[in-house]
Amino acid sequence: MGLIDIFITPLFWIIMGLLYALIIYSARYWAKDLGLKMNWWKWLLSGLWFILLILTLAGGMTLIGENEVRGGLYFLGFFLIISLILGVVLWRILSVNRKKTDR
Amino acid sequence: MSKKPAKKLSRRDFIKYSGLAGAAISLGGAAGAGYFNGKNKATHTGWGKDAYGENQFFNRKPFEAATPTYEKAGKVRRIGYLENIFKRNGELYRLMYPRDGSKPQWSLDQGIDDLPEPLRSYYRNHPGSLKEFKKAIERSRQQRKNWEKYKDQYLLADAWSAAHSSPLRGREAFPPEPDGPPEESDFKGINTKPYRLKSPQHGSRLIKKITHTFGATLVGIAPVKEAWVYQGYLRGVGKTRFDKPQHWKHAVVVAIPHEWESLYANPTYGTSYDAYSMLNFIAGKLEVFLKHIGYAARSHVPPTDYDIAMPPLAIDAGLGEQGRNGILITPELGANTRLAAVTTNMPLQDDQPIDIGVKEFCRKCKICAEECPSGAISFAEKPPAPVRGYLRWEINQDKCFTIWNTVATSHPRGCRICLAICPYSRKNNWIHRLAKEIDPYDPTGAFSSAMLAMQKGFFSYPGGEAYLPPPDGNNAVYQDPPDWLKMEEWFEL
Image (cartoon, rainbow over all chains, first blue to last red; front, top):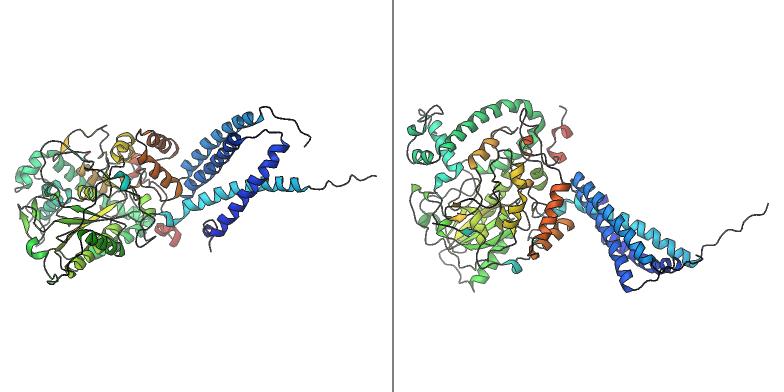
């Protein structure tokens, strides 16, 4: 089995699924400990931002993998900057009425 | 000294930091999955990934159009055989180098008036065409001289091309040339006691399944319109004026791609013959199959054994639309689409043409025109004039052929840059698939404009003359060749 096969085997995606479950489970604790008052649309925005980040990395690397190195790097650069800006904006939104906590 | 008690990791913190680590790992996983998806050869569409083409097909149903996307404008007329560059160049070669070794009947020093009819009339109407032919011949002489210099780099590609073209040459070529008029030749050896088909729908489904087993990536069925049949030359008969044979009721149109990695390394590493030889086998086998079950059949195969123009036939068969580069663009293969057809009298159900917005995309894109080393592809916003009664962009065949004679190959065996760099000619992986699936559903064209802006802003193209040998260019290729075509990987040079 080559390296390529690891990323297309069902086992890889099962592990990825478990990791996402863990991320979602732990996100509640992070939000609480950071004093964020979350509601459904804030969770939705946070989820969409994370998906954007994932697609940016996957998209850029896909292009690099298919021999479009310049295209891949520009794609990564462009969308990582957008992700960063949106991340800052998202943090501002989430931080409104943020409660300072001990943790 | 008093020691600080070690802080215990709480269950809560354990979950939190596991989640954080999980996020980092999953981002890494996404990057890795993306990278290997991009690299994966199985994401090259239509190249033996799946014998029956399952999971490769674009859903055409929502894009079926009542009429094909070519636009009728003016009087429709059939394509004269001399309007095909290979047919007219063939005529000129036969005059210059008679097959029986007799004295040449025409040479490059002579002019249009010294040519026999109908060549004389053709070139009187297209004087630039003969000038370009002479230029191409001069370039081909230089090309042969240059080969000594370049063969250390390109011999593997040349050998690979020669291997693919070998089954197409000589008397043993398959499928055999038609012998006699279609009313005789197409019926030779047919089963005289055919079974009754349940319905034309059954016929179409059967023929498509069979053709896929022969190796076809895409199969469509179209009615044979008289307008697409060549005029002035009929295989098996020779030079003649003829009407469309009555039994050419339907055409089974087959599309396959070139091997993808060599395609991207054009013009020097690729070949047309890989797809051509496969098409000859697929169409030839289908011809035998159809005759065996009792129906007349004639295959029309590349490079030049056609009695019908392929792109409009394939448009009618719903395989795709014609692009600015004159090539059929399909949702699955992009411009990496090579065509053959088999005409038959078998009762079949025709497919519907589709409209996925190729014409509008080509209007905006122009990458093929910018990258064409010969300048043969039009930059015009819209097709400037009708071609034989249809509005479409027309490529300058003569200029295109001159470049075949210029690039660093052993002989003129094509260029194919316009196939390779077309934004539709991308892998069947998730990112390109997503773009191809979303774009046709956007009536505003905003999505394709955004994709095009990325294509032009992020991707690099060598540009026009860079594909030519020095001093005009540097033998550039669109993408690096695969290792199996690199001489330096295997030989001591």
